Image (cartoon, rainbow, N blue to C red; front, side, top):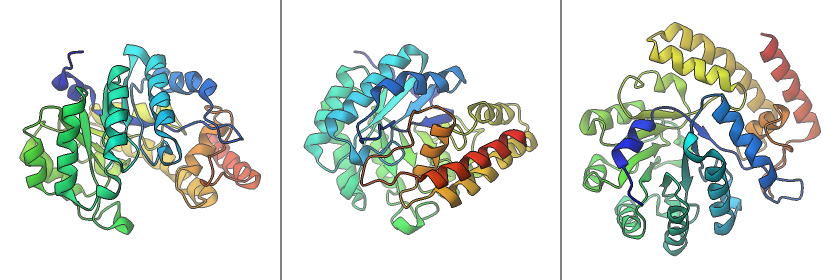
Amino acid sequence: MTRNHDLLKTRIHGPVVGLLTPFRHDGAIDFDALPGYVEHFIGAGLDVLAFSPMVSSLCVLTAKETLRLAVETKRIAGKRAIVLASTRGDSPAETFELLRGLDAADLDAAFVFPGYIGPKPDIYVRLLEACCAVTSMPLFGFQVSVEFDRRFGGLPWMGPEHWQHLAARPQIVGLKDDTGNLEVRRAMIDRFGDRFAIMGPGMPDRYMQVCHHPCQAELTSIGDLDAAAECRFHDALDANNPPAAHAIMDHALGCLRRVDEIAHCGWGIEPIQAISYLRKLIPTPAMRPPLPTPSLGQLEAVRKLIEEYDNG
């Protein structure tokens, strides 16, 4: 299959949906729930869908489950949406096998998760180069913080020289920037222009300051709560109307902050899992152990906050 890397980069702009994994109460993946979940976002106009080790809970899936989940999602979406898969483990052998399977199933691109290689950028660069030899898919690297407890604002572990080296590989089309470091993101834009598509971690206030540059994207902040509002937020930015964008996002983020205070059980995704369940996007709020599932009391409290948001 011939891949057009430049065309893909032009599609990676604006909102990117971080997909959850729907689970049954027994911890099995609920593949029957996937069509309705995927169609919800495509129907709302959100046509770039992404898996990630944390948001999609890939850390508790097997490699075979990770592959099937991505393949089924792409089958449902077809050409209507870009589907970005992700590797999930520290083993290069598993990573290569998973990439071959994703490539054979015509996934649009894949993130290469660094795992324990994360603090060792020279080794990670070699891993990305090795991945280019086993798949024709466009690939995304990860830009993470050198200090885990400062993930959203810490210093990046990959320096400009590492990305300069990777710029010689057309197959490396972009990076997922989990640092939230606006200064570093601007420096990457200044140095590389539109060479790399850069996807931020879901921090709309910072995205608003770089959204006018090409190939800039951001994980959706409020898509599970209100996909229509997420689209209006980006439409307002495209129309150069920051006040309207702020008003949309401030209202929704105010609700999400309160939901997080109530439903955060230690992992970080369970508040969104609860919202998706209460919005009837997925049939249960269950997570696969050892990941925590919100309690009935937490779900009831979140339900009331969603009602307040809808009535606001």
